[in-house]
Length: 167
Image (cartoon, rainbow, N blue to C red):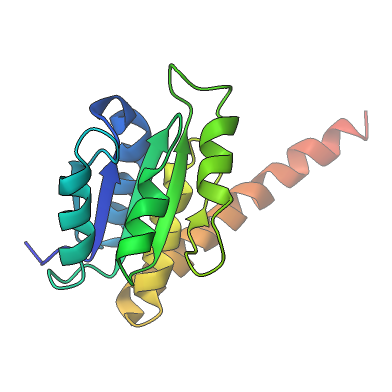
């Protein structure tokens, strides 16, 4: 297997059903990745080591999902020079996900985190693929094909919807 280019991390195993969606998109695009649990609050030294060593291990992007206070994406971004994509996760202790969204979105200047919608790990996988695809034409081609499929799915619905207006 190729060396991972994207790291997918999450605050706890309970985030896996959401974060797995990022992995599925990366698999579809042929982007090698790794996936693990790294908690900002319960394993802070593991988080620091992961972020410090990510680039040296060949990672090019980190996708970090977290619920509740959701400090993981921002803390990782404060340690690494790699792009970090934050996935706010609606968790059991969440305030409808707003706490997670705002914790990831409201980063201070100098420590950016790209933030996708609540539970939108699929979009994080696509965005990470686009970052890798900027310098890898084979990945870029797969993403272009995926987007063409999306367009076609919408266009395929046009006649059916327009027919409703003619009744």
